[in-house]
Image (cartoon, rainbow, N blue to C red):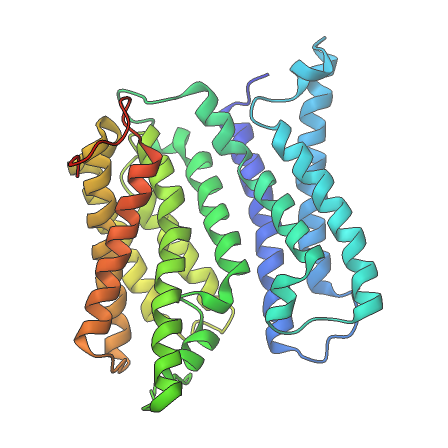
Length: 346
């Protein structure tokens, strides 16, 4: 059974409810250290979002059965992994309650590495990407782009995947204020300290790692989209801005300049997607990947520099180049040639 654009959009809206609830709970864990119980208003928000999206997916299966379809055919195209995700999330939620009763409430990086929280992440990732799978099954390598309204559930689905993954890696996110403070000596007032010795060495390593990891989180889904579809203009402006805005919201938008740089980086990515047309060839996809990543992180470094980053030119320029090269390498892996990769092809 095929889901219409409108039905996929409902799935996306309910998935946003779930994800926003996760972010609200994340904000509570970071800013309210006195939390000592599983039963909180923050948990209620995202578990109610889960209940809503579970009821919606279940209702669509029941609707297919009422139309006379067998169970296998009654599951909407692309939604079987989402049903698996719902089961994983349900088990993860139940075991998370037991985990908290036994081991208490996590308040730092341990919360992002808790096995039960990783189960919740896996389940949520399978749920929110259902509209992408649904769209991909019926619209592959289109000669012309889908309308923005038709493509929007797919775009928002992948945006939610970026958001969820960014949340789980916030301890190495290039947009996270707490991480930035530890990495560059940053305070909420925008002042950077001058680290020396081992501290400076470790901060450089962490800063480089944060950019390279965030680069993969953003551009792997982006390349997946442009490899198969001619994305409507504005797609990456929306996606990258939403990711930066939600991550910075965890610290009350203390690093709001990154929202601006992500908006501009997304806009540049949209321009490149329109001019290079990466869905039409392997070399175009690789060129798009390297150029989009390089521009995005150049803008990011510019935003950090406004706050007084203080990195030597070799550090920030080399990191930008590494980000561009790694994104180009992702493009190579995502679009192997039919004859394989031969010597001298690059």
